[in-house]
Image 1 (tube, rainbow, N blue to C red):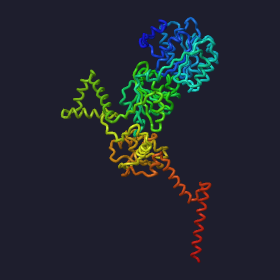
Image 2: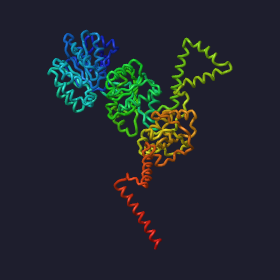
Image 3: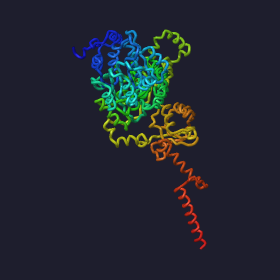
Image 4: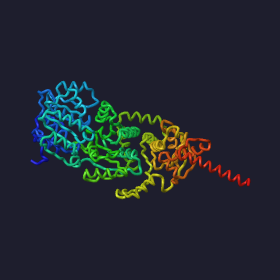
Length: 616
């Protein structure tokens, strides 16, 4: 019998486990399940090294649940996980695996859930306890969790527990266990503190090492886009439009990033929600339920918040911010392509982050293919396909004949039906324009060329406004420093509302009560009307034309404005202080103040010498 022909029935599992697994649609075990289940059924300790998504939850749950004595009402199996999401996922899996067994009780212990719920489940005689290290230790210290008769313990994603600072709690819990017990430890990597636990608490562990995600998750298509020419927000919207996905998860590095990206997506019509550590447990569970039931399509999350997340609908992962360590990338993309499902992963890489990409490629043992940003033609084609599908579906509606009659009543016979349809088409398209202008021409460069320093400097000069001058018009907007406005607020509002590449926005000057901005010559009237109603920090900018201006020839002060207005403000402050100085302002101090006084004395001496010569 070859390895590929092994079924769950060949591994020695009891009938109630096999029937549950069969009902879930699984027939052949994954490599880690084939390797771990026999050892754990035989009572051996197991040290498993495998990436997320390899099927390790079933690898330890199936054999250990098979050994539960349902007649005994005390904790016999303990699973520790780094996050509440992973703990809930493991507990749900255990309930599925034991649904055909009577008398198996499972409790989940984690922070954020009411104690009375957990205490009630423990008192009812739960045999399986799944939880996070902190809450498990809390119950031990309170005397509400007795592990004196525990048969087995599982440490799931031990390296993540180390990274999150739980390793001391883990060791404290391990020290509370009876001398005779079985241990299973699973970790994607094996740093020294984890090795120390294996040596201290495990007896002759059987090591099981499964190769990288590329073998366990062969159906994940990975690609990267180099951030150049377009902002990441604009690129994200384009990729999400053309990608064919059921549900997606977008990873950002910070909690603030999850909120910003979610706001962007909601503004453009996507059903998105944030998932981060600031949310209450109830809110987090409601968000995940919405993702599972299809009322939510996109989750924007941090690494820790999405740990252990397993939602079947997720078929796309976008790394909006590249992770600082390669292992986190593996865990991120493991949110898709699980249990034989296909998926894709896109990674955004800024120029300064190429070293991090190299680390990921070394870990994955293969390069991540580069992709081009979807162009206007791809966007058009995608939007038109979706639009046609929407209209085609509507053509099948049973009330269509009534609306045909209404059409005849509303319009006269001499009006062309095609003109009417075209007008309706323009109205129905909304913000998702079906006719897009060509993208601004961009120089195409290969990956190797982009590593050239001179090329990067030239690219920076191009983005900063150097190079070929562009004809500009000067406009005034009625927001300024007194409104708390910064240049980045104005650029963001103009770029988002007008769908304008930020490279095509000229220099901006900030004044107290208003500002000026350069925009490309010949802007459509409709767009200028839109800008007139646009708000910055909740104030209408009321844009008005001032004069013609020639772009591309930007001075030092203008470049300072583009950095956020700091240089311009600094220059204005200097001028203001100089004017006040002649009026007796004495805010200067130290060397500058002395220089001012000495300069004045010298001026008076020279004037006295001149008067004396005239008198002589």
